[in-house]
Image 1 (cartoon, rainbow, N blue to C red):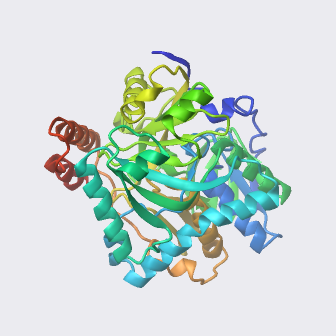
Image 2: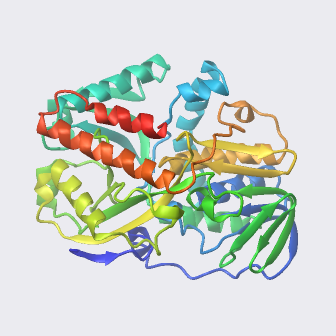
Length: 462
């Protein structure tokens, strides 16, 4: 496949000089106040807010690879503060007012990430901008309109969302056949590897111990066992998101859904003028098998999407290497949206996994009986949501009853995924239907949403 580098975790690490070296592993049996499993955004934000609240706490973070190895160092760099789950599903565990308040607090995470990065001196290419989701057909435009109207019904401020028509959308970015766009204001672009590595260094400065190359083999009340020794702790946080299935007893909790990204060579100035993407807005589309993109600091296009959605038996990739057919699919998406880019070369491609619960809705919580907490199931919205998870988990670990700990996602327990081969068949069937729905809409001029997409959602409860 026509790409210079495939895998090696992600382009974001190549951008900062390569994959980092390892911190020392767990030196043997230890005892601390809090043990956090996983050194990604969720675990590190939790450690950060715990230390802000109680500087004297002893905290150990154990990580199988290195801090930021998983989705935290591989994602598309969207810090959106977006509520991307079914609001109606949370009515079973909360009130309408609670969901509105939770959504308001999620939006505040964009500013909170900025506050922390400025305070800690973390240079992560943070840039406040807009996110534009484009419609390339009447059916897609109708879906954007429905999403906008739903958000307004849930009291999302009009200052946050804006629906624009085709000419105005094309004036911002010359997406092919643009019918219009949904604009989310006050979102941020980040370089995720810079953010997660900077956050790891910030918690270390506060006395948090991060042990890498330490594989967790079990979590139980008061103890985390690893291949390097055990950690005794009164409170334990499972912050493993897309890798949760690898911990005994959690095999069907969340499945590792694949997402992949390609990055182009630096785009020449004359091509940027032709594309019209003069700002650094985030870019997405309203197809059923959606995509996400950003214009990077040094002027590349990073385009992401699902590719092969799920590997049988919850298997994961090898250090980010993705399949040739996934790379081709992402190139096709890039060319469909921005045909001006057809002459560009690809410098890097990679993939990673994100955690998906059976009901496709994020949760955070702590079992007071065992002292074990968790957070995840972000379904691709983890950069900002993990920050709020960290704030909430800090409250739960410290037994603080706050406005955050009473929100509808706290201590919510969706049912587990089916055993194989049913979950593989279900997920692949869903995405086959999404792709088929997109093709059907394209072949009919996109006049109406394909019923196959509705069937896909019903199939997996999305």
